[in-house]
Amino acid sequence: MIKRVVISALAGALMVVSTGCADECVDPFDCLNDEGAPAQGREWACVDNKCEQRDIQPPSGDDAGTDTDAGTETDAGTDAGTETDAGTDAGTMTVDKGGACTASMECMAGLRCEGAAGARTCQPLHIAVTASLDGGSGAIEAVAVLAESGATVIELSQGAGPSRFPRWNTDGTAVAFVEEETAGAAALVSRTISPTAGVGTPLTTAGTAGTEDFRHLEWEPSSSVTWVKKAGTSISGIYAIPSAGGAVEELSPNGGFPSWKNAQTFAFSAKGQGLQTRTIGGAAQAVTGGETGEQPKYNRVNDFLLYLASTESDTFSGGEQQPLYELFTLPATGATATQPASPIARRSEPTPVTAGEVKSFITAHTWSPDGTYVTYVRAFYYDPTLPTAPNVICGGMGAECGTQAGPNVYLQRTNPENGQAVGDPILVATNATLPAVSPDGHFVAYIQGQRLYMRRINPTDWSLGEPAVLTPATMRVQTNLGDDHRPRWQPR
Image (cartoon, rainbow, N blue to C red; front, side):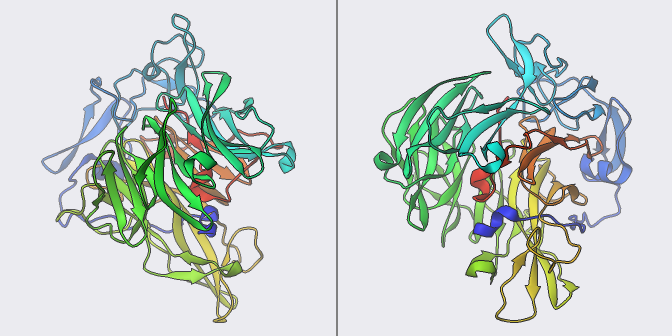
């Protein structure tokens, strides 16, 4: 599993599920795919299987995770210009950076409402990562940076030892992370950060929790901080502690990669059992159709799981066995007769190169908040013709792969009604990894050359803004532990 962190994305087209008829559309996604972007202030509707443009109606109700922009917007780092979102949002999203606000829904994309009551303003979201400072020679630390170019780096740990795995609470006012005062003595702490860092609060130690480290650490939207137990080479068993402190609770005796739907229900995967869901206090439930699934990501809006599945593995440098994954979606309640089994992203067909082939598989996947797209990494690798020679991941590891870049980050549009792919994948970045989507769905962050970048997404035509680098050249963002090192956006 150590190779998953350097994985990349596919340049070819993915298959779109066919409707099997000659009608123009079955939903607005068909119209957007076939007809292009609608006029400003308009949106596509599929009426009697025909595409029609309609005026965008004022939104109402609770925020489902997508936004309707009120007009020209200057974002926190890159600007996509005038934008009309294809989704819905309860907020107006009209207040620019520094403007007065009472709630984050009023702030433009990439911003949240910060400050004391009566004096709150819209400010850029933070992104938390694990990084080393001083040109890579410094200690590994949990840090937070503002989602804008040239922002100040906030070091979260107050101790002298290394720290890692920063995770936000539900309202984005605190971060939990692992801290070591002495080598090998890990502790779990939390610290407020709204908008400046406050005093840290100890939660538990590795010794008290019966683990060597806090792997697969997660917090929001749960009310507890959760992790997976590590014992030697084994990483299995899901545990939690209330964010206010208290006793450690076992949530599952086995499994890993917990992904929360809400404060009580989460999905996870267990070896030999596939995808599971569990509500605290209840028994684990197997997800029908997910028997070979791994690493689920719960979409909290449409209750779909995004996950990896593999039917074979191969040997890579160092003798590691790497599963050759493809990417799928599935309702969290299990497969139905109407749920296609088509992958969101497949392994690629081999490309011949000198004395071997270039192939690829999928990793580092995650949802947009509303389920209208996913991001993932396609890992390209060189497979030599010699049966005893190991495969080599493309990207900075020799010339075996020829001109193939990798790993690459991609965005794939999806239909939130059935979880299936819509249109072709969109290349976000080459030689990059670990994409993370902002809570408003308008930005994707990723790591390239050990620096944190982000790009704006315009959901009207799915164009991307220019990349903005968020971390200084003296800071090296970590990637070697895969999803444990994925950037985490501050909730809005």
